[in-house]
Image (cartoon, rainbow, N blue to C red; front, side, top):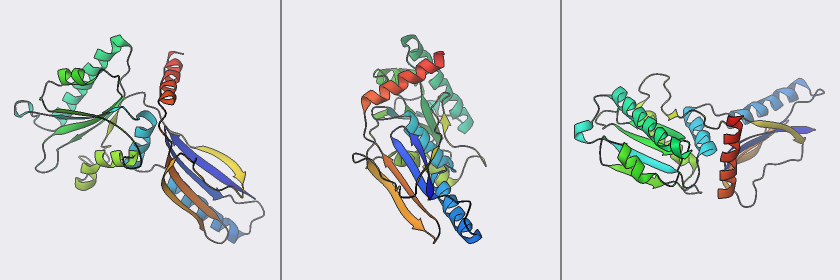
Length: 256
């Protein structure tokens, strides 16, 4: 007897499922029940919605010390519509990228544009990787208003990647997408992507998190008579050295 263990590692965020695997000698009923368990497990792991994809993209690319920025417009520079606002945020990000380039510092970001709902005022939220020399540079480059809010991110049990993804997608979830099928958040090129890893494990294996991890969600085992599955999501502790090493490896691969 064996199970399938499938997990996605996005930075410090780990999502995993384990489920019963159908065997060659199973009866039709047993095979059907095991397939139901495996389908339920995969549905738990798959990032099907924009919100789920955003959570994992944030976790794979940003960590403690990176920046959450809110950029607003004064009355003089308030754009006419959402499209004009998007042109301005793209111009700002292009200038920020050029400012960092001579120092050999990359720019990674995710941004959303809000205020398109009735009674709203256009503004932008951004998650940006920090270089340690950001605040004055950001204020200097944002020429459309003086109200620039910058805070450093810190992820823990009370402030998770899911919380941040939820905040960044609150407007489309409450008011609907600006256009049908449109993704409501925009990532920079070159962000790390997550891929599931799959292995076969003995039937007695259960899902556990490392002792120092923070368990965010935990379900199961859920049994249906012939098959079972379990699901867990947890966050590993922050390790600055691991983050720096990962960034250096990514840059070396790009040069090759």
